[in-house]
Amino acid sequence: MSTKGKGKQRMQFPKLYCRKSHYVYLIILVLVLCLTIPTVSRIVKRDITDADGNRYVGEMEGRIKQGFGRYEMVDGTVYEGEFKNDLPHGEGNIHFDDNSYYVGQFQNGLPHGQGTYSMSNGDVYIGSIVKGELNGNGVYTYEATGSTFEGTFLDGVRHGFGTLTEANGSQYIGGFVHDLKEGLALEIDGDLDEFRGFFRNGVKHGEGVVKIVADGVLRFQSWNTGRLELDETIVPIENCRLTIDGIEWMFKGNECIDGLAHGEGRAIALDGSAYINHGVFILGKLIKGITTSFQLPILDE
Image (cartoon, rainbow, N blue to C red; front, side, top):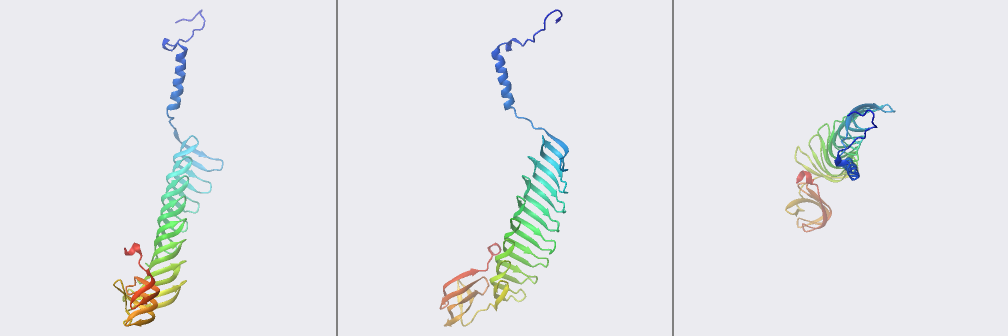
């Protein structure tokens, strides 16, 4: 339609929207749609270098690292893997400038979950990690000694139950506290002779039983801070018998009556399963005393 000679034409809406109330409804509808329709995030791949010289190549949402990417730091550390909210999160791997590296799960910027950590000295850990520390069950291989520990860790050190296997095949199976052998354990040497007994602060301390594999002989021992103080063969004392719960025991005490253990003394089960220190016996019966077992539930159940 020609507008020549006429004033400027006003755009006309269809009659349906002529009323002012309809304009109000339209504005309200637009606002509702803007508030209720979810915003579709846009993730793009970028290559950026920050003011410190650290470079990131990967997916971003706005200015936030989000998705998969590679982050190269000026100190030589490189992380490649998943990001969430600008931090390593999910599956990834990180290589440090000292040639150590970690491959596994991350959470909020730290190794967390299951992973493998290879250290600069050649040691390798495979297992559970919590907030960057060795925590939970894992296997640690020591490069320098060739030994391997499989068990539980706490705050980066052995703590709890585990098995330490040396390069020569000898083993320690038992407890650890703050990286040191502690409590009841089974120790097997290179000749397969066995020691079942107690440790404290990394050394033998307390009572134990040694089994010599070659001839099957059992020996009772007592240790004090790694120093052997008592070593005797476990054999029945014919004129001083002692039977507890159907098991024969060796009795070493101050007297015997009618061929039976009597008075105060020490008793050791002939099968090496337990001992009684400072017990009180009357005519072959235990009256008072604490029986200490050498059985490890996890091995002997």
